[in-house]
Length: 392
Length: 105
Image (tube, rainbow over all chains, first blue to last red; front, side, top):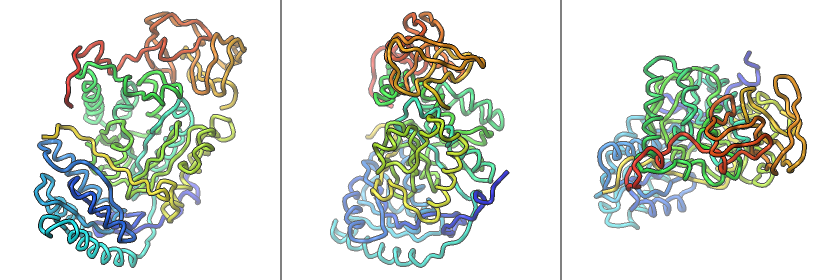
């Protein structure tokens, strides 16, 4: 039964490729670490622009090159972005021009600036800023249109987990995942590392044998990375904070993390930073590292991310609102400046999982309408790529 | 959810503390529709686990009705269950992988 409140229309921006954005950013996208400083300068000069710092884009080959390329392009194509100024140095493997061409397929405005072609940093900053000024003004004239949950891709994530994660905030996000799926939308489950030990529960819910087989494949590949290194994965995951919060093993953490996936069928398993082709519950193969996972989901088209935490974390994205949900009330009160909602009420018996799920749905509606999340207000523009090959 | 501690599924052999609990205190828990009382042998921090059944070394530790690891020591009822007496079974490159750590991805 879908209540009237939940079925209300959301507000967003219709992009040329038909997708809906809930933010209207102009992204200054450096394809190479050498261009990140110039990109920062442009965002200081031009209101309405965002960028991110990273250390990639050169001396990368093969599948690792492709994954980084897909991540850059995905950030540019995300419908929360109105237009993109792609900034390169000139000699890097991840050519600004190639990334720009890929983003242009979405139909949005794209400009390319090369520091070498423009004869240095200062001119590149000036030219990039000029292009950005034009885009920001155009973006400000974009009308908002109504849409419903079927056009949303929601990323789900847990970071800085504690023993409450699997009891309160994660099941509440699971309830939201089901609600989004039932309304025709898409919910992304990710962090493959943190599903090790819970994979059988997801594989059982796979829509067909092929998806079920992929579940076991990505889990095995992730587990093998630890095994090849000759280490106990517990030396890094669960993290020291997780252990302090009461989580003893990766399996325990995983079983709590898996509750974020609700109860609906698993439709598809996509690679890191790939856009889902199916609606419903979708698994993206990412590591458990918070920022790399977040970046993968946003590059895959998520307009909004639900992020649960027991220990507390400031994490945010330059282009997608991240709604932070605490698993316990103590942390909510301690880190109120970073956390948007509290699910600790479930532990205290004051609210049910479904009631908190309902509150999260309301928060999604308000965030789409323009309410800023704490991570947006604090300009927490995190970005990190899951590298799968060495730097040469 | 309300109370001092929670057993997630009847087959579990651990419970989770929902408030900080003191050593030698008696905790009442719901199991199979009945209330069981357990005397704690350790202080249990908020969110941490204690055994609600005897768990022998090598036996699976269960929470959520699933295996979360294996007991590395014998664990008595009421004892703190954590990294000092539970090991993960997954991602154990130290046991099953190459002994020598190698650089690379």
